[in-house]
Length: 182
Image 1 (cartoon, rainbow, N blue to C red):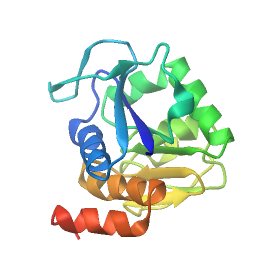
Image 2 (cartoon, rainbow, N blue to C red):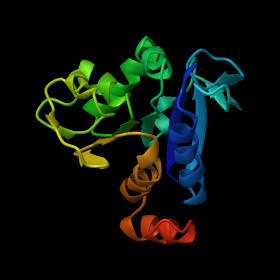
Image 3 (tube, helix red, strand yellow):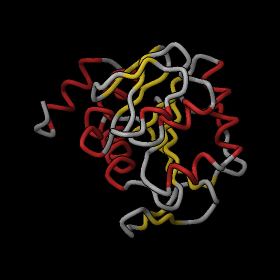
């Protein structure tokens, strides 16, 4: 079974984070909701608190197939301030393992130099954060082992792209139909 870690920081965008968690679980992917500050629950940008499965300290990253960063403010800034998360994102990237970010969070990848020469997208108006990337305005972009997406309105498409990358296109298509998306 494929495994995903979705990272939560205070001020995360609820729809972006929870759509990914929900759709990956519907596809049969084991999802761990991870608090970057090791709290039992994390409150999003719109004051919705979600119970976490784990804290980042002591997390066994080797078991995961993808690391996912939702956007939101100040959630994205809080994720970027987490050195342990950035170290793991770099390790996954360097190993060719899948990483994904939506809304403002692709800026984290840009600041880390992970987008150099790659196509990527981000929340409108934040394109300068995609340092070294070829900025595109698609809803979702996959460039090698990096998936980026633009915001809350693209959360379903982003989650389905993760399913396609982790399992296959047919599974993503069936899931899209089952939720009356495609």
